[in-house]
Image (cartoon, rainbow, N blue to C red; front, top):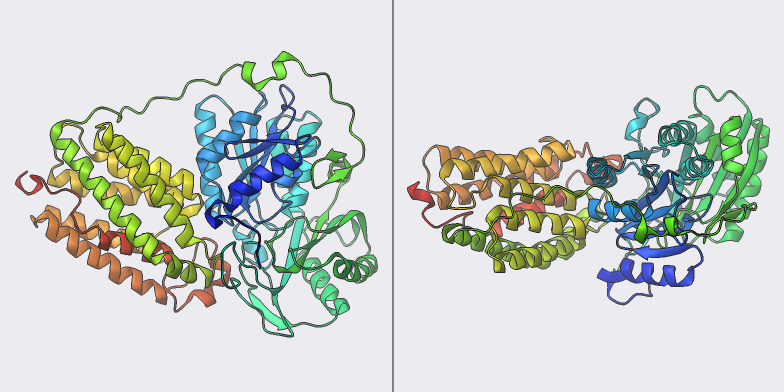
Length: 585
């Protein structure tokens, strides 16, 4: 049970404040996360870890010399937004480029990827790498679909050490790829975790059982088994990892080992387990190199543990052993840092190239102001229904995910509405208003849904004229452009069990009816009904993308939360997308 919090919605912000205050010699808070207390040395690659909070000491606990240059921190179990990632990167970069390191989750891949493209466009070379160490989440012939769990710690450590040695960006990426290719993790859960403010854990494990193949975002295991002795568990973990060893690893050799507690498994229990693991590794001809036993990648108060093996070569051995000094991880002795100079001060570093100004920020004409008023009205309706349904959406999401969908949607729509109201008060054009709303939704909600809703609102606005009410064809195009933006960004198709399953039939029906001559209000109502039916139908589908995919069987029988929330919003927006004069054009 997570007992200590103020406002659950501000849990992460409050945590960052306290963390930075507790470790001023290592970190300083910046918008979106933390960076090293001393600036990244000039010319060095800035390695940034990132992901949702709830995993301490991952990800912010390993910021410091020898390890990460900064950490991008999202809400609990929610990927940080692209805006947060960009903010931390701009605070940490020092001329050598930026590398984002994170686990292979759709929201992280999407948001860090967006940030990297934006930074590169602004003249800051930026790349991403997603860790895929969880052998339970996909078979050996589909490693690119595997999740990133505790093995990310080893990947982060070796890549950071390479950057600390002065390796250029491409070499640091190569080290991350090489480490990941040789890293395997398998975990078990004994009981679930509870979100701050939650009344019950996201899942439970029956007495005397364990969940095999847990996720670190409160996801249950992919299967259940009997809970035996520590010796039996050690054998299951080691046997599972050895069966999945890398093709070029051989039968023996050196391995980096992480026996990781998930938050509620005590260190004494982990040491009991480690005694058996160490013996089994020795029997397999493997030599542990600087093994780590303890909490390194947690899941709030989840009871469970995971075992990670990374098969080392000479390069990885050196980087794994390299010294580091961070709030949560220390190894060896680092040389004394040079005296700080004026060039080290972020305030006097050369500024990045200015961003391109969005041309949609023009002032609206009188008619277009009415369209903007309709958009604000729609966002108010969306706010009301999402707050009403937040708890139910969270329960849907917890079936095969982390239970945060309702909370994230509320944060997103609140931020979007505030941005839209401000833009409307300034009489900005509909495109500028929806761009501001989309950016705010994506920035505050984070996660996959935040990025997708942000993209949809921006695409919707881009089609709307600034000087008049949109015509029938423009409204049809706006719907299809929003769908294109979502599918291009997220890669989902109809049938993948995502919000696309509701958005695609809505966009198709709305555009089709408009082009057939139906009144806007009737076309919109019919399209919203199509979305509701399609969202309900997702209960029959198996997820093929995203965090729910490894738990596909659990998801069957439950509608997709993203499709459900989208259909609810479309239904709640009783006023059609435009009302003034649209049927006359």
